[in-house]
Length: 378
Image (tube, rainbow, N blue to C red; front, side):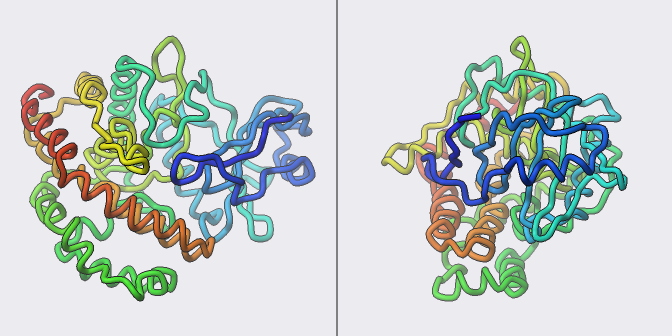
């Protein structure tokens, strides 16, 4: 394989991988712990995703997706929580990865400071393999198909009643931003994290959150009482879907799945796919693609109706849906990688600038559009 090795940078650029790519010497003894796979034959492709090292490989008995995590990001026990959700969805006929068990019966293996997982290659065409997060669907038809697939996943997730995940870094969950006192909740989170203490020591984070996010968070709180907790995907982007004949054939990458709410997941899907956030780095306005918004919600509502109250709650979620993950990402960059520059991007550009966008003209245009159409998806 002569694929150039690169990773997706935070500003959309290609950068050198943070985590060393998987190698033959590493994979051969790993695959030997999975007798059903057979011997390694080739590494076919290295993933450019930045938070772990992953590759598609061919062995004697098939094609597999192998992923390596740093143990402080994902331990075997934390991955097994994710795998239990995947297995629940498979049992409900959702096309998701077939997680492989080792000879010891484990779905995740720890070797030194690393944690590994192996999935069978999923069915479908990887049309968005090299797409960055926040890049658009190829068509409104794909947006509609993605909406339908998300609604089906939410239906299938009902009845999976596990507690929230134990992982505490790179998590997309309803944490501080669903608490009655946001600033107290964030303060408690900082108190538990040396990385956040260090990073925020010279920053007036209370003033920043109070200005950019606190009003929206307070507007969200009344909507939470009517929302049932649900395990959700939380990274519903085109690049995490495989395709066949214009429809979603498989759902990938449950690395951010957790116990949240269906509307949290739906708001994340809009945030991931309908706003070209990277335009802000070059002075653009990041104008929301309202056709994508409509198509995704049309598709979702074909399977699960979205009454007026649901759209109003969705509108309330949108300005804050990224926030808990942005804080977690800040902690990852500063605490795991000792990368202050990337932590600055996570906090200043992802957390705060995205919130400011919703306060500005383009964000208000998106909100007004949803308010105008809120009776159309019931």
